[in-house]
Amino acid sequence: MVVLLLRLIILAAVLYLIYKGFKYLFDPKRKLELAHEKADYYFHDDSNNPRKNFFITYKGLMFQGEKYLGETERSFDVVSIFIWPHDPSRLQGFTIEDFRFLETEVRSNYPHARIDWKSPIRELLEKDRME
Image (cartoon, rainbow, N blue to C red; front, top):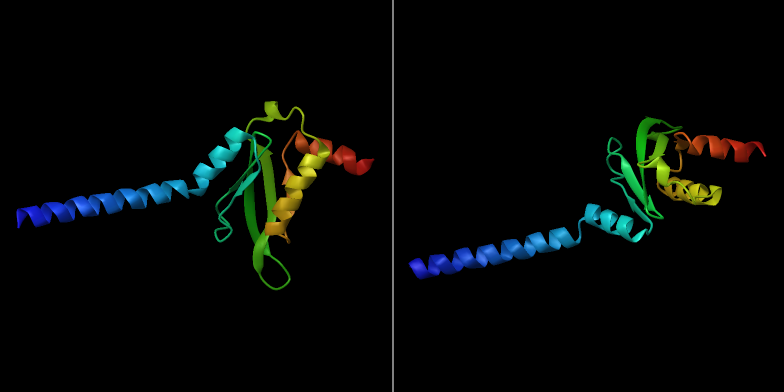
């Protein structure tokens, strides 16, 4: 009886470790960190929860976006988004096209949202619009 109970405990422990391993491998935050280290593009967002911020990593720089819920013509949706870089000192080498690409990616998920960038990106994009 004790041997059977011990086998069940070992089997449960092995199944739990396998479950935790799969959960770790498919964790979106881990994928975000991996893409950030490799300087790849990755968009991490819980689109079902408008209170949770989203994260974008692009060219080795992490951006964070804050979503605001509001009223559209027929429903409530995310209507305003503020995006800022975590480390503005690493913006060297970024172009206006890079920021336009990021805006396009965000708009594909939130088509009704107005996207605002925090300084210094906002000033760069305003200069481009005036030209």
